[in-house]
Each structure stands twice: as structure tokens, then as C-alpha cells.
Length: 252
Image 1 (cartoon, rainbow, N blue to C red):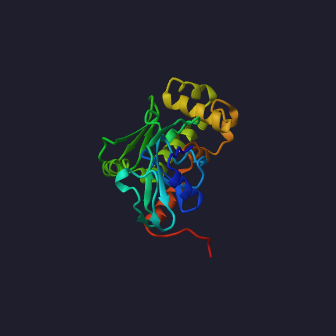
Image 2 (tube, rainbow, N blue to C red; image 1 turned 90 degrees about the vertical axis):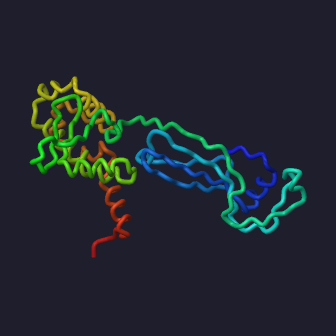
Image 3 (cartoon, helix red, strand yellow; image 1 turned 90 degrees about the horizontal axis):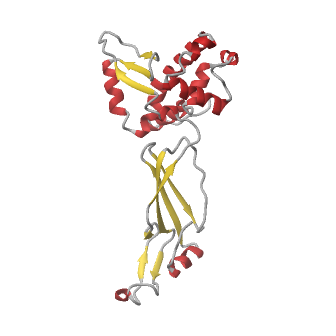
């Protein structure tokens, strides 16, 4: 809810000449969105895939049409009786920025560094990505050049969906497929590993799927891996087509 004390700005909003504008930004995901409204109290629904950690909200009042002779009784004495020409799009007021802490009820595996660790493969002759889940974390080993390419991109929020599709999805698919090949008793032997606890909890809470049941053997591990990481492949394709100036379409 906005708190506005200026009668003249309130009048402009009521007349449709100005509106509330909220700029929302999440540094962790690269999300940016502008909400424009004439309501003092409004709501906006965000997908859990778009925000994580902290969401910064900057409020403004912006002219939505030209105002040729703007004046207000609440002007400072130095400007009493003066009028100003305000062009459409001009910022007429700036509010205090609010930072919202985003708490998710679901386990976002792709954003859990303690579950996955991506490292350089010490074997310079290996040209393939390898996965090791024998320890506390799921270790993804990349060839030297691929590792440094990953490191240069991982700080770019817009690249996260692509990186997750290239590394986390195949690694998680591999691990889940291996779990299917084990007996339930052998799966339980991994209970002390953090990655196992996290995946077990996420599968059970989000998809009612128990990794320690016989029904798990009927699951499509590739589909499960994508769901657990919030389906990054579609976002990756969107990012790539946007980067290359292309748009998706129906097959001819």
C-alpha cells in the first residue's frame, strides 16, 4: 500500500494524469519488472521461479500524459505560485525503496550450493562431464575449458537457466536413474548424505514421490529432474532465442 501526502499528486492520479509505478528487481535471479497502477493498494503475483533471496521494490509517481502547467499549494515557499511543464514519463515523486525477503516453501535445488558442487576435473585428458554422488554433495566435474566457461557465466543471472540445463539437469537425471537401479535398502545407505536428504524431501513434498518406495521405479527420471529444478529448459530456449533476435513459432 502506498502512502501519499501530496493533495496535488493525489488529484493528478485521480484524473488519470499520473500513476503509481513500482520497479521490482531481484539481483539473484536477474528479474526486473515494472508495475503501473492508479490504485493506492494493489497486488501483483510473482512466479517462484522469478525471484529468490531479496526483492527490491522502488516506488515512483510518474506522469502518464503531458501536464503543461503543474502547480501545487504544497510547494516550498521558494516556488509558490510558479507552474512547471511536465512531460509524459517524467518522475514526479520518489518513495523509499523496500527490500522484501523471499522465503520459499519449496526446495529450490538449483539454488542450493551445498547440494551441488561444480569443479574442474583434475584429469586433463577427460573431455566429458562426470558426476560423483558418493559423498555429501553431488559433485559435477567439468573439463578445464568448460569449467572456466562455466565460471565466467555463473555470475550472470540471465545465464542460470542455460547453465542449469547443461549441468544440473543431466547430473540429477544420472543420479536419479542410478537410484532406480538400486534396491530400497541400498538407497537408504545414502541417508547421511545431504544431497539425498534434500532430494528425498523435495520429491516427497512437491510430487508425493518417495524415493524409498517401489513406486519410484516407475518414475521418469528426466522428467523428475526437470521438475525439481523448476523446468529451466524452456527458460533457456527463451533466453537463447532472445539473445539471437529470434522468436519461437509453430512448425509449418
